[in-house]
Length: 516
Image (tube, rainbow, N blue to C red):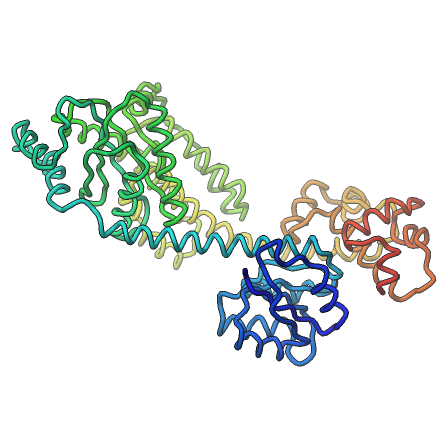
């Protein structure tokens, strides 16, 4: 059971939540309550609860101060914050401390149970991950003897080894694999990794594959010899599962090459074939499975002349329009990949575009970007080259956008002022503002408004109207709903006004009026 502490300065809420929640149903137990943050923190130091359900506003030490204090001394403790509707800014601060669960008061049993279930699931997942990693460390102590790995490494890389050597060593290791049909799997880890990760992926593969015959690490790759049972679909499912588990626990992707079928004494030829498959990562991309068929299918694609228009990328960057620039780079990527040029020629086109983009920078920026040119020649996939271009284009476009932002902000502020002035106008819309007030293109104005504020104009208008309605309800006890609807631009449709109010405020206007 996970221990829960309940904190609230209102006695009725403490007693109510304590009584209605079926704590045991979600593997928790309520071990204590507190009336403020000071009492709560003293309880934490003594009993170390796993989960704290706390109100945000409390005397002495409020919920946010409690979160900060507990995170310093008990960083593993999870929080569920309870708050009123007008305390969203406080919730945002709580989220900065890693608090993911925020419930609007008054909250019912189901919402509390759901939040508890999610936190318990997080604890379970962390425990499972820790158990898995601990198991992997144990398995690392049981790897095959070094001599067995060394033999496989020498057999596939040293031409002096032949069939007689294989006969000798298979008897020594008790393999008895002569005459068996085998395939070679070659794993390559993508990105930064430690040497122990090679052993980890090898152990995972050995657990999932059907009794691999031999395995070894060669340079920064893992080689595994498996017996072929004739089911290519089963191989693919097993490899997919290996990649899934390894990525889940180590956050590192892998590219896998699978050779054709051959005799065990042909391991050197099959190894060269698997290496050839891996070399096609440049076009096929990192991650996934590459077979000889993939290479043959790629070579059968009719090569087309590579032609592209740099302005499709450069002009949006200059204008600060990152979305269009990104679309242009994606088109560049697609056309370059379809051309199937040799790797060096492909990189030269990438380099050419990179240099063209540097001309859009300031002199200081240009020096920085020119110092990174060597990265292009070192990258092993076309996708990595494209990501480098995107990173650079995004930085330049963002800077250009900021330079234009002041002018745009003035327009958006004018739109906001009009919304306040015309809040009771039932005809208030984006088209009305654009045509009647600002004499602008509505589509452009809508995109500009969303880019600046993060939300659509219509959503903004509705939110402003409902916030105004909440203010009027608080200040005018006798105001009627049909009067509110008419004053705030909903015309003679109070029912629709109530629906919108409930969607945004979380309760009907009448309920909100009672709470106020």
